[in-house]
Structures are given as structure tokens and as C-alpha cells.
Length: 132
Image (tube, rainbow, N blue to C red; front, side, top):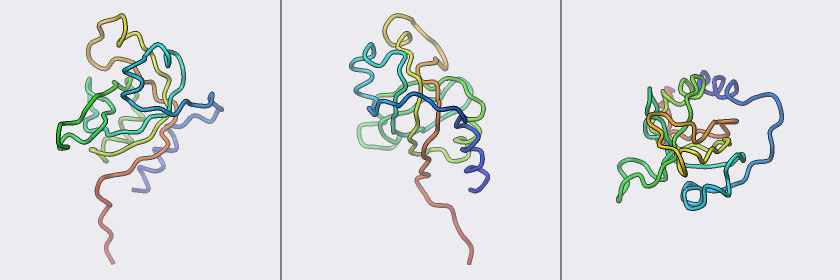
């Protein structure tokens, strides 16, 4: 757990970033041009994140009705290393949004729709086991 928190600190850049726009996945997908090129703060579930498959979704995979809408997360080895051991997990992060793969381009694999700027919170669905 401590190692994951230390890796989390390494994902966030030291420089200041523009103030993010707090929003959600559905709002971004409904009006991608509004958020294009901007830094957004989103919350959601990362159910899988390996290789060419990493996205943030509205709900866990097992949720009634499925995981809902998603946005792809750009390739980032530090982010993957931090999130990987905790999957599935609920997260909050700031990311630069690129609307091209949603509005005009056909993008395959791990499209750079969200490029993580700062991983703000990770909440594993089950707390770690502590021995007394």
C-alpha cells in the first residue's frame, strides 16, 4: 500500500497545471468539443488497464446494466504501474482531453483521449488486510 502511494506521488507533475474542469464521463461524451484541449477532473472505475486496454468507466464491470460509458486513457507506464495492483478500483484524476478520437478520427487500441496530468485519488474496492 505504501509503495502504491509513493508511486502515486510520482505520477503527479511538480509544475502547476491549469485549473481542471470538474465533469463526468457522460458530459464529456455528450459534448466533446466543449472540453477539447482542456484539463478535466473525472471520477470513475478503472476495471482493466494493461497493454492496449485502459479506460475509465462509469461503473464497475459487475454493476447492473454493465460498466456504462468509457473514455480511453493514453499510454502511461507510471500510471499503469500505480493502478495495476489495485484493479478494479475507483479513481479521481485530472487529464488533458483530446476529442479527436471521439469526434473525427477512428482510433484503435489505447487512444490518447485522456492524458493523465495528476492522479488525485485511488480507492481500492476492498481495503487491504492488516494483521494485528
